[in-house]
Amino acid sequence: NAGVTQTPKFRVLKTGQSMTLLCAQDMNHEYMYWYRQDPGMGLRLIHYSVGEGTTAKGEVPDGYNVSRLKKQNFLLGLESAAPSQTSVYFCASSARDALNSPLHFGNGTRLTVT
Amino acid sequence: EDQVTQSPEALRLQEGESSSLNCSYTVSGLRGLFWYRQDPGKGPEFLFTLYSAGEEKEKERLKATLTKKESFLHITAPKPEDSATYLCAVRDSWGKLQFGAGTQVVVTP
Image (tube, rainbow over all chains, first blue to last red):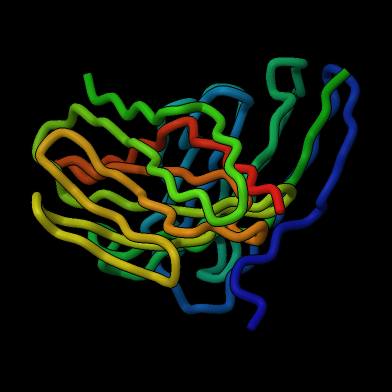
């Protein structure tokens, strides 16, 4: 059972560079999410998707874009990386009944922007 | 504004020394309180969901309880393998999920 898989696990970028983080889930979940986790702060929602072809902004969306072309994949893009985007990024998914379903998380991508 | 506060930030326990973690919240219309465990370098792993005051859930040495303003995660006779960061999250009536910053627990032999 792979669950939620994130690639890459680590990445170092220079300011202004771009990159895409990939998230794949094999649980046939409708909902997918991207969070960032910073020291001393709770997980903060960047963007989310309630189904294939749909995306919506979360709490901290600026500087990020997402796409959900296939139900099992959710991509997070950084067009022009900034040092403030240094963080650990987690993808998560949940079943259709999102209000009552727990989130299933991947193991994260540690991104450093210099 | 919704807030989720966890205390203490860090907790160091001897093996077998029981203790409790606190998650206090202010949210408009609680739709669920979730507890997660997070190991270093890993994503959070779901433990419990609580929906109403008075509800309790148990799993091995962990027991979660819920009141109208806070939740406790009791760790009974902890073992070193219980060392982790424990996160709580609350979902409000709008469906918004908000996480606390977590409590880092270290259990020494």
